[in-house]
Length: 137
Length: 149
Image (cartoon, rainbow over the protein chains, first blue to last red):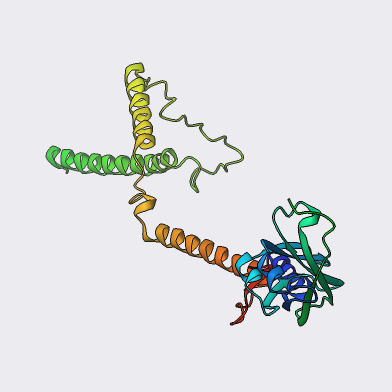
């Protein structure tokens, strides 16, 4: 009879002891940096925030927010993850259409932050403009 | 001189005495015999149990003097069989059906409540184990992404 209650209790204890997941939060300030003038910012059709390393994601940012940030400061985004170890790299990309064409990539910038358990970290991702080697068609 | 009438009266008195004596003697002789006949193994019998075998009695059912009537026996057997059959087929009074008892519904309700509680508790525990609720998106942010969003 004792075993009947001991097993679930042990299970709960083990779950509570170490199996719990905790959110970690990364507050990222997204910026258009060097080479991004008003014209270039205005020509952005799509922009992505790629997450790699301890966490992996491909976030499509709202195009309207990307192209209207003519001051170069797009604003803050928050990224939450259960990753509690390792490094996470955040990469900001801006594209013209079609983004499958490498010549349509307008710029890129990244930052790497260390993951931790139940932490909140801040970072800045500044994308710099890229020289286009060919026409974007 | 004795008169003939006096002789006769003397003779009669003697005869009466003889008769009374004879009767008394007969009574004395006959009374022990009666007692012995009534109690052959008793104190007057003089013989013990071991000495004299007991008379074997037979049951009335096996009494050859009272032979069984096959029809009566068959009727008795039939009646006994019918009584047994009636006893077996008699419906047992078990009261109302189980679903009409409050204990049944109490148990059902308890089990249902425990099940629902267990489901909610499990979900809550699993939700907590899986990180719980994600923090609300801070005000002024463009948007929030990632796990739990």
